[in-house]
Length: 108
Image (cartoon, rainbow, N blue to C red; front, side):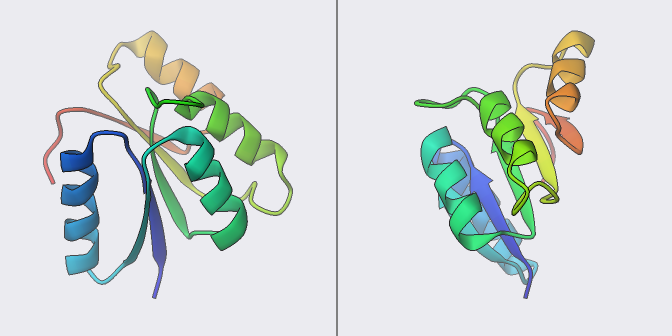
């Protein structure tokens, strides 16, 4: 079973994403801030990370850059999930190493 880590500080959105992913057959790990998310990535090596940009303690862009510099987890696919939707924001997210960029709100 593939494992997805959801790093999102909005508890309602985190729970909704986790529930829907579990219903689709994924094992789900969650984190509410960037430091916790980075720690889980390094410890559990999830198959995919859904990463909010605006997080407490360590923002999603920094998490993404640190993951890409760590040879043990650098290959981990990362989808940025954020309310920042301008073209410039998307470019910054993708330049930080994200594989894809999804803006809020979105359809489940």
